[in-house]
Image (cartoon, rainbow, N blue to C red; front, side):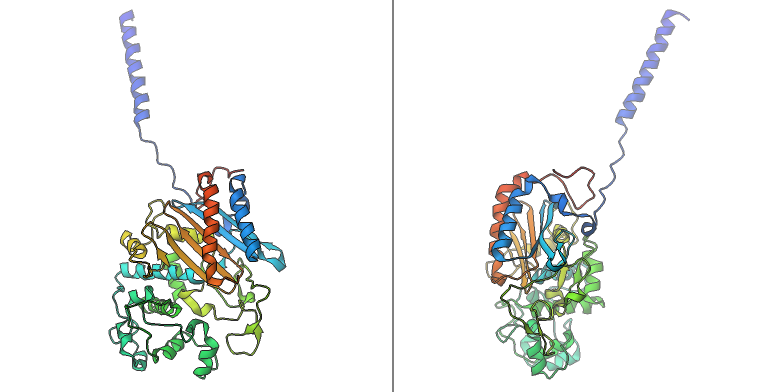
Length: 434
């Protein structure tokens, strides 16, 4: 072989090698596997959010608890649909020396209305109802002839689904909130047992409305009970089951439950609820004649249904908000249009759909309060969402929310820029901050 041929063969080999290398370099790499969703209430621990980065949050929460006499708090923080922080403070059950953790679930009170409103929007998207649908009467959703026959005030036939969502249905609590007046309703209607939802509805339909539906508003738990009954009528399934299967599980929320009334019936990972030390025993809601602690038998919590009975962890509640906020990082369970309608701002005197208030700046608020519970969901314009739930009543009642917001603002001022770049909604391979 001549030198020229040898050099030619070497050059050809070099070209072939270079071609193979280039082809390998240009070959598309396989896409990384999708992140594995974490089962939040089984995987999260307090230690995952133990870091000097969070010192300001820890300090603010502990001072808040001490000032308001709160036994336990669960707090989770999300930014741009990523769960950055989730931690429990104080006691989940003081008598059992059980510390609060992110895995514990707590009653959410009226934060439940946000969940119910989402279910209604889902049904509208499926074409199974419209927000313009009438609620009562022959052409209404709740069209049972017995109920229609009870109605004496024709204004009932003007109530729409949207009126109920916006607390514009015409119902008033001036004579007492029917959802928290079980004992009185039993006496007035000569009932031997607490009314189920159908019986409660019958006791209310014979009364006149307080205002023309749609012309003004008054906060109404009863209106959201009607929405729960509408969901049952349209789906043919009980409210809790349909919401779990069709709304919550698709959102990645696996541990939401309708709460029970008594400590002995609480869920395995549910907290114990506490009243303030000076809160006196009250008569049991079922007219048994017994005296009970207000948060265990003072009211029929389970009967609140979609108006206020859900229990969940703050981490899973963050996950739920991530699926109804219109952001792309976590797929939403409702359409962009439904998100827009739920968060649309009209004026300071108009309730949003499910949310208490959605400001034009992009700040959204949902509160919840009853005996043994105070809850706040605060979604800020910069994409951060802070969720806090207590297991203790305070003397401020529903008025605690502004003070909770103030605590959020102080913590955000010191910690927002330091929050780690991680997402605990998914199984983490990297270590957590020390």
